[in-house]
Image (cartoon, rainbow, N blue to C red; front, side, top):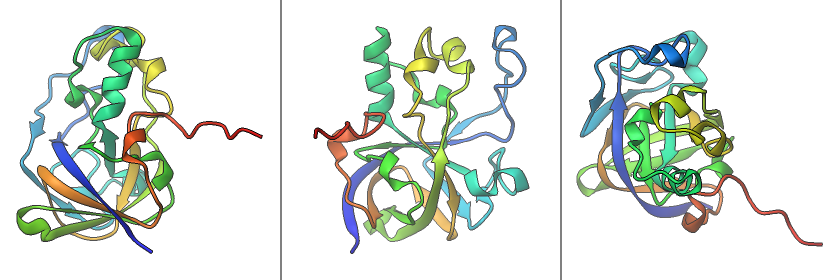
Length: 189
């Protein structure tokens, strides 16, 4: 069975270089970063023009998904105002998508005119936050982002991903209201 969820692709980040390396106190590198309206995804390689494209060490994690609701919840928890989702350096910022249950599944995101473009991804692991999150977004963000830093995915098909209304197709049932939460609640006995 396949479940379909209406989502929105808010941002598509593409950067040919790493901005966060070395020690956070030294500051981020000034690298070109694009918030694109459309990106080309190549199966088993990633997003064309991105720093992880075609890199062997990142084939299973070439595209990162991140829920905008997570960043909003993190901002509330640490007492900060609106946080810039592009500073997380995640490639695809979504609204309306519970991500954590998707690990190990194959999912499809349909976007573009008439939702005609489809990209299939396999989320393989969490995108763990780094200490740079405190430096770039604000004190406490690194800790608050644990367990909800997004997902690292391998693209299984080639095509285009567009900013705007989209549909997430999943083999597992999701709860869009849980998009900003780090994990499922513990079950009561």
